[in-house]
Image (cartoon, rainbow, N blue to C red; front, side):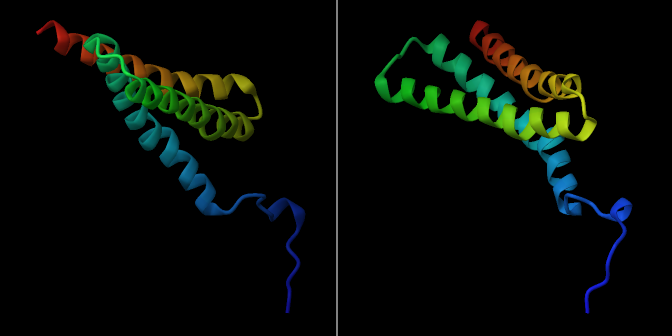
Amino acid sequence: MTTLVPPHQRSARPAWHAFFAQAVLYLLAPVLFLSSGFFTANFVVSGHYSWPRTSRLFVLSVTLFILAYEFVYKEQAARAGVPDRGLQAVLYACVLPYAVGVLMMLGLAKL
């Protein structure tokens, strides 16, 4: 037997979707961008430019752009209904941790 639920009580997304979106925004994306910023700065500072290392960095960069756009920007813009919220989420969860990772590597390189 199927029960009909009024439209105002229906959710377009299951409950796990909201949990996953918050986990990506506050946990997964910052950790990945922090470590990726560190790795990218390490590549630039080391001076050992080879095709395998360059291709790894290229694939990492493309992956980060996809993560930032699909799982952070679009999700937050859709939840809030305005693109500015998505941009703020990308700055907070992606750009800031990436910059911190780069600064950490540069700080270690100066030691």
